[in-house]
Length: 62
Image 1: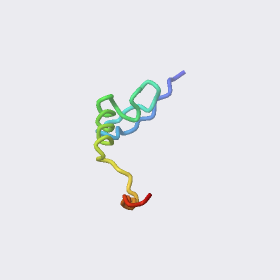
Image 2 (image 1 turned 90 degrees about the vertical axis):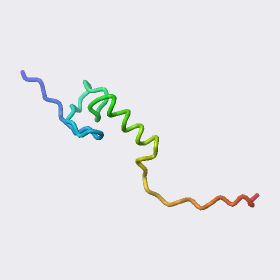
Image 3 (image 1 turned 45 degrees about the vertical axis):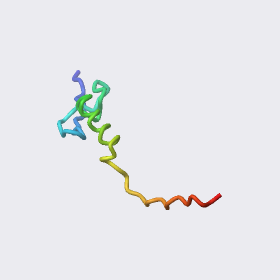
């Protein structure tokens, strides 16, 4: 009986192929380092989801 081969996916940070399986705790990333790089990009707003700019708040309303 053969063991099924885990599907390989490209790491979103570096592009290296990594297994998409429960053996890879960082999936879809290849390593903890790549996962942290991606998290840092979101935290510094390098990635964003486009949307409408909300209207400016009117401080005179009560």
